[in-house]
Amino acid sequence: MIILASQSASRQAMLDAAGVAYEALPARVDEAGVKAAMAGASPRDLSDALAEMKAVKVSANAGPVPVLGSDSIVALADGTLLDKPESREQAAGHLARMSGGSHELWSAAVIAEQGRPVWRHVERARLHVRPLSPAFIDAYLDSEWPEIAGCVGCFRIEGPGVQLFSRIEGSHFTILGMPLLPVLGYLRERGWMAA
Image (cartoon, rainbow, N blue to C red):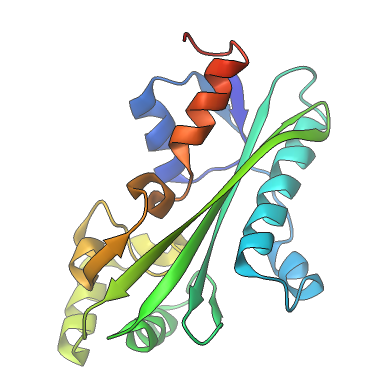
């Protein structure tokens, strides 16, 4: 049994599908404060720091149980970082900015034990967004809002969000929000899962 320091439905679905026994506990970290304190940091370093913060915070009270923290950051080609949309209007704005361009999605996973990180992995995916008409964006949000409110990048790749893209480079799991294959490898290496 591990602890997932997240309430993310997609991260839980990945662990469920992979047969990992876990308990999900929210980390409740001040992500906005971390992003402000790390202004100018690379998206890679920011996703890693947030994943570590989540894992360490929950791990401090979890005894010897390993805690998995994960986080994803979306960076547009101009370096702008996109946060989870706070409103449908903001989601429409994000999609309009992404239209016809590409962006990077960084997903980090950190495992902590007894309040300290013991393992980490960060992966990048590049997603190419096809040109999106205002009518498409409106119809897309009619079907996906508010479910995508908690999604960085305003999409669920496992659902209608796949229609946003013309090409994707990188692991499907990374795009879902966690570099799952390296996580599973580490769990097997430590004997927490059958090898």
